[in-house]
Length: 493
Length: 96
Picture: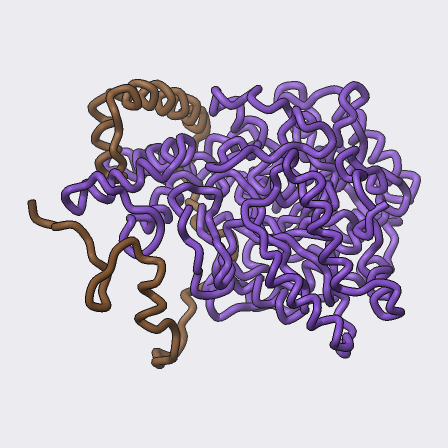
């Protein structure tokens, strides 16, 4: 087994009793990276020298504040800015962005908790994609079977956690980018409520949808990592100023009497949900019944419009957000330009990959004169209808449960030539971002033939992450899917 | 139903400050056309009485005092720049 198979509490006990040192933990991360990352390709940049130096210092300190995260190796998705550590968003445009000037708020908070940053994790370029095949560097592979994608866009984060290259990781989720790779890699991933976690220092993709969240092996660890990164931030004007609960308190409550809503659209053939996924979700619902909860089928009638609305909205916002990449202040500048406009155009075209260009084009079109009302504004109105669907269900239910994705992971190369088929894979995660509610994926089964993990999605009201933790923890306690580990996670102890 | 023309694709590429080859124009015309056709699905819905959602939370404009504070030094701001001169970012000529 790997030291990363322990829980946070177990690791802190071992550090406290001197059975383990922080240096050993950090070294274990790099040893595992050496052993498996040639195949997994989860990392873009390693922070080895600084991490080992920090570990040495932490080994001379006592963990006085009883930080649960003290000395724990973490990986950060490469769209979060890290001071002095290369940050590329997996884009060739930022290939030389070696010396960012500040830390994202989440990175700063983790430093205060004394976690150790192992490195920066691969992703789809600027978080646009569902397979990691849009990385400008390499396609991260699924640790359960390297012929398959790890999901995306936080594919590096989910794969690194599943392969025990780090203890846990941060991802970001705009249309499913934490939950879908968590489902594909058999780990636990939470997209918090919009506004719960500061996005200061997160390179913006679609600002009305983006959220940062934790990816871990267990629900309990997930709650502890979330606790460390939440809170109001004056540097992010969309960050919510609310009272933060203690998320681990949720584990004291069982699920007896809870009312679960199961959207019929989320189990439907029409949305491409495959038989095995449906059966796994129904089996999970049986577990909840046995634990004393009840479930009922409901409808989220506008689900089928979510993907179309999302791609218009997210691409429009992206086209504006990515205007900052102009080759003037940072990033790569084309050497073939003879005037300013030409320099913008060539730098961007040489630096951006196909999917990023496609979305900038789509967004620019949707916002352009004469089309704004027909596409962008129409999509915003449909967003209202989708949000209302969720509000209505939550009038009568505590939580919504369904699959995270219609199918388990697909093969590398399988969908890469057809953007629309690729987009359709996000049909069950996108509505959650449009409504701004929190959603989590936890492992709930494995496909018989391929052995690939299947994810259960748990969705709650705005800012009711505690409900998600309560419901997810009950399932985890009653099952052992989270204890299974991929072949590539077991290479080295 | 809106058809997207090659001329439109070139115009949008210019607005988006992307250089685009003739070959890419062909591919993009087809792919954008497909995505826009798919998005026409939204026209099934009557949204004439629906308010648009720009933001899911009930947030108002967030104000703070306009006070100067220390942030980034000039030399730091320049250190990732592709080109610089005399403490400023240097760019190619703006006028042709």
